[in-house]
Length: 141
Image (cartoon, rainbow, N blue to C red; front, side, top):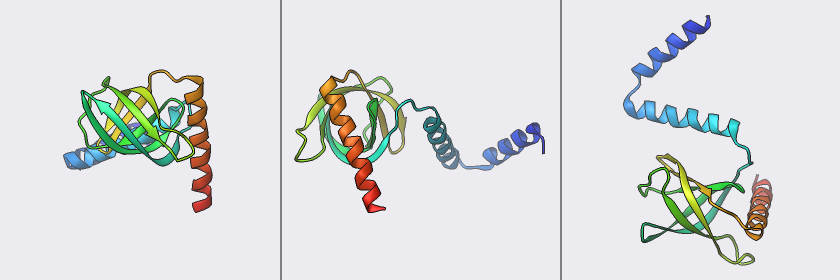
């Protein structure tokens, strides 16, 4: 099969999918592509986060974290470019800390938030969180 045939066959398959199936496929493909182009390693985690957005307060979970940002599992409606203030609570050993962020990616399960500006102390705390989350994941495997 040549490149043209692959492309044509892919289009046929995609056209035969329902709108929900197409959306799910697109989300899966976006995830694969994003993993390839990330500059900073993300660590899967489950960390409580409180955040303020447009005068309202919410609480959800961070699903993954890097020194660049986080992915928050949420059903709240956001737009790319929305600014939010995060308060991250990792453990009793690390005091909760605040970071301003901007929504840079939206999928059905939540939002990707890029940190606006990290202090050196915040960056070190996040590196510690990444390290400890990685270690606890290895222990549970």
